[in-house]
Amino acid sequence: MESMRFIVLAICLLVGPGVTAAQVTMEAHLGLQGTVRLEKWNPVTVSLYNTGVSLTGTLGVRVWRGSEYRQDLHVTTFTRRVQLPHRSRKRFTFAVPITSISHPVEVSLRTADTVLAQQQLDLRDTLSAEHVIVGLTRDLSLDFLATAFQRHTRVAYLPLTDLPHDWIGYDSVTAVVIKGMSFQTVSERQWTALRQWLIRGGTVVVVADAQYALLQEPRLQSVLPVEVLGLEQLDGLPMLATHYGVPLPATPLLAARARLQHGQILVGTPEAPLLAQRTYGKGRVVFLAVDYAAQPLASWPGNAALWKDILQPVERIDFSRVFAELGLLDEAHPVIKLLSRPILAYPSHVLLSGFLLAYCGSLALLFWWMRQRRAKRSRCWLYAVCIVLSFTVGAYSLFPEPALREPALFFDVSSMEIFADADYTHMHGYLGVFSARGGQFTLDVQHPTTILRHTFHRGTGKAGEALEITSEEPLAIRGISLAPWTLRVFSVETMTPTPLRIVTQPHRDGLTLRVHNRSHLSVQGMAVLYRGRLFSLGTLAAGEELFEELYTTLQPVESKYEMAWQALLKLRPPTPLPGAAYFQEVLLQHYFAEKHLAELSATPVLVGWMTVPSVLKQPQTGSPARGMTLVISQLVN
Image (cartoon, rainbow, N blue to C red; front, side):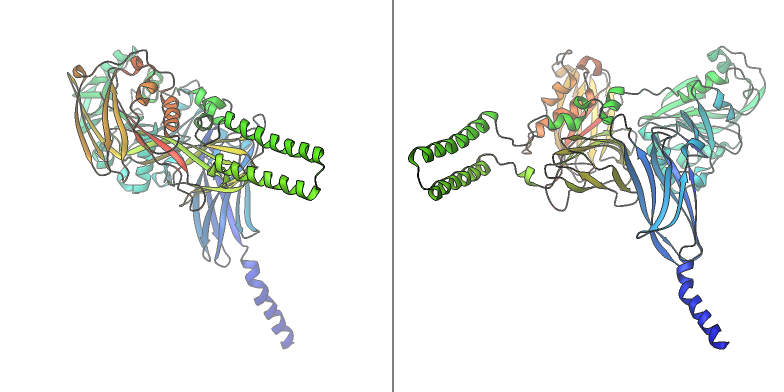
């Protein structure tokens, strides 16, 4: 009996670790409180609870992208390495693109080839909206916004602890409304993420209530258009009623006492603003001096008109650029346009035709001689081999294109938008991977908060239907499978610290400009386009500062009918890089499109060049990535 107990105990000790290792509980949620926005990146929150032994695995979120109509349907898996000690509970957040509800989102935890936990999120069970508004309030007083607009709108109330840690998490958000919350308690990473999203084009609405001191805290004060001084009691809001033409009862209510610091007044005066806004990068910060949930404002019939002015929810979409990034307009995509230029050292058609004619003629002459003279076959074949070898060596000498002998060619053409009032820059990158031999490739990306907007392929072969993107540093796009003579194109977007600090001061005769280069790269071919005139500023080396007085009265006027990109291309810097002029031409055409100089006469535009890729890291082996970065800033006038 004792021996039997010993055998059972031994079996339990041997089997026990294998059983406990697989005891992982997974719970995944999609969207902001279950709300997703199609064609945007949406958050996926995954909670893991390990009741077994400690383990290290790979957590992945798998989504379908593209469409069968465009023949670019593919799978993208976002992965992250995780460590789960015994009895640990951890939460991870991903941001993934949702393009349709046809395919579910799959979440899995794996160790090697073993699936420890898996969950499918059916997109047909989620709530879809065209506008998502995040409410950072202590009450649920924003529900009326769900019916205030024609487009389907949903309001998601989040605690400050659940705010995204990267700007990508806000991609599906239309606006953020803040009332009665202290942003001094959020982490520095969460605050940076909100500011980066705001600079990219988001809208933040700050509403005053009885806790006015929260609006005087450093973080909110740094982005507000006003300086909050205190509270005051008003007998109604006659300016608001007059502005919107809707009567408002003259009921006493509290309002924040403030004065305008930046931006413009929408309702009120600079010394007593009721509604004010300022631009912050490409985004807007709106200040409302009264609590929208207090009477008589809560039941005021003009509320819908007020919030339409506050949110301005109409999105202007450049369909030509969207279609180009989707692969529907090849001639408009920067990488496709670039490869249509002679950026590779292909031989001329005349030289190639002459070489082929000489080769074929030599072989034909040899075979004719063999037939006429009836020479020995061994000697004739020796002559044929000599001709083939001679022309092979000649082809390698006359038609060199070393890049085509590399496993792949990497291209990176990017535009970097810099804003005078922000410390982060918005970057659009257009990447290309071309292989004449085919194979598996990886793109290493410099910035960890880069998102992949669109991808498609062109060429004689096909590209793989599965991609893997790591959701942690270092960021990489893996599993790029290409058949021979195939091109894969990627459109990406990111936010990075700004390399230039720009200060401008307009005056009657022109503009005072100060630029400090804080990066480790020089900015070449800098120029300012202002009032139909071009001002060449030369090169600004790393760490240097430039100070210029630009007088429009001393500079000749360019033709107002000339294309803006053509005028700026004339000031491009000389560079030894092969094909650099074509890189610059494509970037200028893509940014300015068909705009004439007359259309850009009011706002000064600063343009410069970094002659290196700004999105891709240089491959450690093989051909280096070829690229060019357009640095551009709409200067405040």
